[in-house]
Amino acid sequence: MKKERVLEICKGLVTFLIFYFSSYLQVIPIAIFNIDVNNYTTTDLAIVNTFTDLILVLILIILYFKELRKEFKTFKDNWKMNMDTAFKYWFLGLMIMCISNIAIGLITSLGTSSNEQAVQGLINSTPYLMLFTAGILAPIAEEITFRKGVSKIFKNKWVYATASGLIFGFLHVMGSSNPLEYLYIIPYGSLGFFFALTYYDTKSIYPSIIMHAIHNSALVLLSIIAL
Image (cartoon, rainbow, N blue to C red; front, side, top):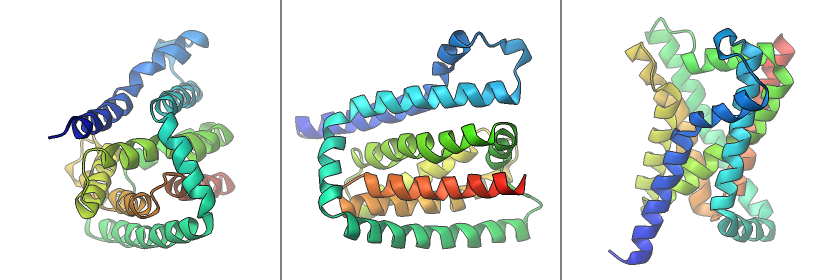
C-alpha cells in the first residue's frame, strides 16, 4: 500500500476519533461558564453542546483547511449543478427516511428514537440556540466526519456510501437500552448514504453540508412553531 494511501486512511480514522471523543471537550465550556455539573439543567446541556460542537467544527476545519478551500472553488464553479445533484439525493434520502420511520412505527411500539426525544427536549428549552447548533454546527461537523473522513478510508463509491450511512446511522442510536431502536439506523443511515453520494459525485463537501443544514433547520423550525 502506498504511503499516500496509508496517510489518507489514518487521516480518516483520526477524523472519526476526534468526532467520537469530542464529548470530552465539554470540560471547556463547563469551566468557562462555571456550570455546576451536579445541578445540570437542560439549558446548561444546550449551552455545553453548542460550545463543544463549535470547538469540534474549528478543529475539523483546521484539519481539512486546504481541502475545504479547494472544494469551495469546485463548488463555486459548478454550484447550480452541484446543488441540483444534492437536492435530488436529499429528496431520495428523505423519502426512504419517512417510509422507514412509518414502517418502524407500525411494526413496533416505538414512538421516536431516544436521540430524537433528547433533541426535542433541548429545542423546547433553548429553541434558537438549538437552531444554530443543529442547523449549522452539526451539519458541518457531521459532513466533514462522516462524508469527508469516511471517504479517506473507502474508495469504492457504493462501499463508501454504505459505510458512511451505516456509521452515521449507528452513531445516532448507539447506547440505546432498547434493541429495537437500532432499527432507526435505517432512516438515519438513508440520509447519510445519499449525502455520501452527493459528496462523491460533486467532489465538494459544501452541497451536502448545505442540504444537511437546510434539512436540520427545517425540522428545528417546525418544532419551534409547534411549541
